[in-house]
Length: 140
Ligand code: HEM
Image 1 (cartoon, rainbow, N blue to C red):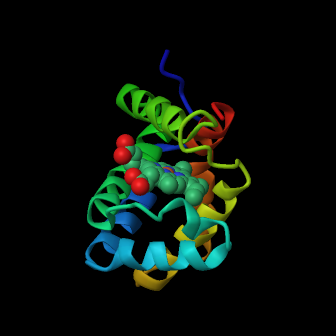
Image 2: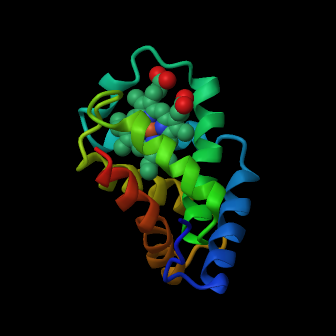
């Protein structure tokens, strides 16, 4: 069942606009992976065999699914279910504490690319994405 998240349409709109500003920069995901690799020494080891051209595209949609989940979208829910399975202990085996690092790296990258970044967005991004991330972690 699709569940209504306690996130307002206005809040989601602000995140979508911020994300659109970030995506105007072609190097956004390249910078994200640089920041993610630097945030915790365990991270690079997980990506040794990764095709980064594909991975950058996958993450572009991945972030969109996190936002859709916050909106209560059924598609978002299905995609988050799949991401939870993919990252769980039987598949990629991603320790749950790395999701805070992931969010930290994403926020750093957003700050570097969104020219209208402000204190409100600094709180709003982790808040809006927290619902889907909690769901992914719960599937570990
Ligand atoms: C909520 C945050 C995250 C999102 C939205 C996300 C999204 C994705 C997506 C869309 C894929 C591609 C899935 C596919 O090919 O079917 C993926 C793969 C992967 N993710 Fe995540 N991810 C997240 C967190 C993490 C974290 C914390 C790690 C820790 C290192 C991680 C490591 C990986 C790895 C190793 C792959 C496979 C890369 C490969 O194909 O070689 N992810 N992720």
